[in-house]
Length: 524
Ligand code: AMP
Image 1 (tube, protein in one colour):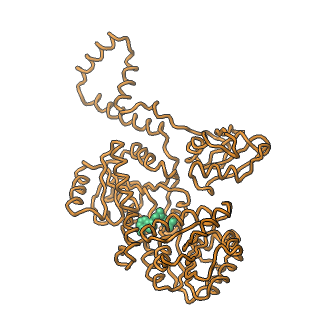
Image 2: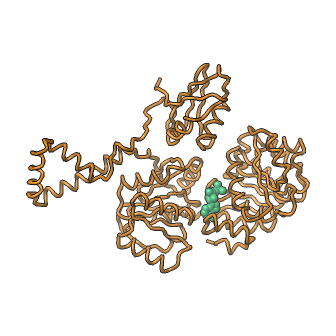
Image 3: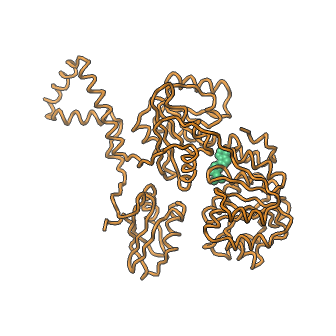
């Protein structure tokens, strides 16, 4: 696997990927970047989560002249969310390329605002096809100096009926240009577009090796990105593995997560490529002798690790490649012992996980996130088991005397005293952290149906609800489920893992200037 130095990047881009915490190029990046940097056309087969945005973003930026304020690169993508997300990633990559402006343009946002931004001089536009055509027709996007065009998630764009729009844009672009096409699947219409609009394209695909997945229990959890460390700590509490390995995709995440876990009272340490050999040795010794119970690592750093009794592997980030998944989970269940692997999945990463399942021919089962109550039950059971052992093996005479005397004095029952001691032993007061639980609200599986106290009569439209929920909670708009508008109220479905956050975020929000109340719907 190559690091970014070997890919001969512009030093400003190298600095950016280092700051983003990328340790090595992902497989699709390693293959695409050299080809695209030569200016050749390319077809890349890659799913979201493989690092595909940087795979085209890096060579695209490398070809942009920051002194020229004209539009030089266009990325077409299927949805508003993807346009915003890719623009974010490309902006981060361009952080040290002073003078380069990146702008997402998409339907639903006021066009006048976009026009104002475009007038300021934007070299890279990432947009949905319809809105891009709109700007071309208004002459607010001028194509004469565009040297690179990217079709991102081309199969999705075709599924959404954008074929004609894509062709319109391609037909209006200068003949001499570079065209990069990325798609998770390669159905016929995609190949047809490639044949018509790409010039001797190179096909890039990560060749799958035969992968043997160890026979261990594998689970995944759909999580809210902001609750990832909370979910990880619940799983750690619930399964209580003696030694665990937690994988993150970047060095930066490793450092952040270690701090977070230490703050929660875990014995955690990090391992990544920026560390000196002596530091690495210290961390590994701590892990081998059990002083460190949780080792948080990047794929590169974990490569040399040889520890046999890792009881659980956690994919804090979904790995960027199927092979990484197999390597990661292969760290548990060694030497004939049983092991478990857990993967946290955010939003559209589920497609990447489905790919991993398919290619690795393995079953990764979805599990509900354990609630605080589940964790409390399991912790209590463990403590009671330990107490049971003490009863069987130890002489408790002295303790019994102390208790008897005390209970006589205070008039507590022995059961009350046992419960209080259990609470002390658990190190927390479980009733202090109530978890908002949602029963059956009549929603689709995995979703919660929410009631909102405004509707059609208040001149509310579906877009208002969608915009307010996505805008206030930061959740991607395409995660919002069915929205049913009635005269005076509305029902909207949101993923279960986001429900509390949406309710919380909407407490102070207004829709069309009106304060609203959101609550879980009653089952009809
Ligand atoms: P994408 O497939 O473009 O949606 O990327 C998924 C995520 O992977 C994004 O958060 C990227 O910032 C991140 N990413 C991209 N390339 C790398 C890399 N080489 N190492 C670690 N993370 C990466």
